[in-house]
Image (cartoon, rainbow, N blue to C red; front, top):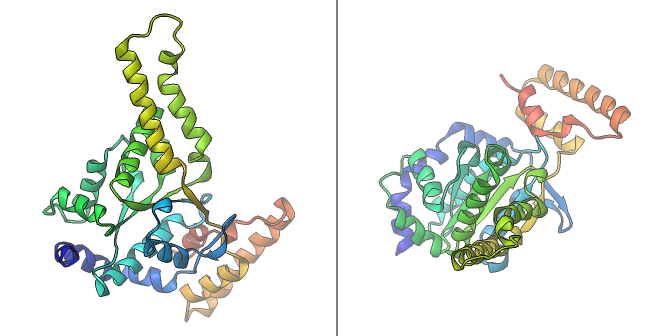
Length: 297
């Protein structure tokens, strides 16, 4: 069957992730991040895992939003590791493919995106058509991290081409998560991108030829595709760690080092007190990326 063929072809990738000591430690020490938004409050990893294994055509793409330092990249790495471990035990399930979009400074199409994953995971021997088959069979979960870090290097036309590629994959059956800071992925911002692309033609006061009309219709068709499959998305918001979560993470990461625990906790407590007096309680102490810097060996 197709999933056993997939398991065999991707076995080197699976073993590479499962045997990576950094990934294993990250999963074991990870402080479960929370979603907190209009859909409710819950652990992000639990919710995403349930989503990944529930066939829901309406929510094929999840846009995971979070401010700088909330742990979006860390979350996608933990998901990659845990979903691969699950796939190793149950190869009839979903295979996660994590791709760092910050690696792209130019626009890509669907094939370029998938080739990038294969080449960077020593899977160049796998035919791209086989990957598309797995996508159509709902066997792939795409974890695309850092839309905002990619978008800042692209002009509107290039960003739109990338979104079209994701929409094309969605039409083929792809399910995925796209992470970004909120200000880089708003519907209004992207729709303004679309409008700027053909407004010059549609606002002409002189004769518009058949070729121009076809161009406008083609562009509008692309807009509809992107809006249907990407912009009309299901959005979740990742929140900073609470004080209790932050302290738990530090104690777990510095287990056996009581002096180190006291030192880092004292630094964060001072940061929290200062932030409460300056901005009403918002603090860098709840951001996993800041904690990671403090815990570097």
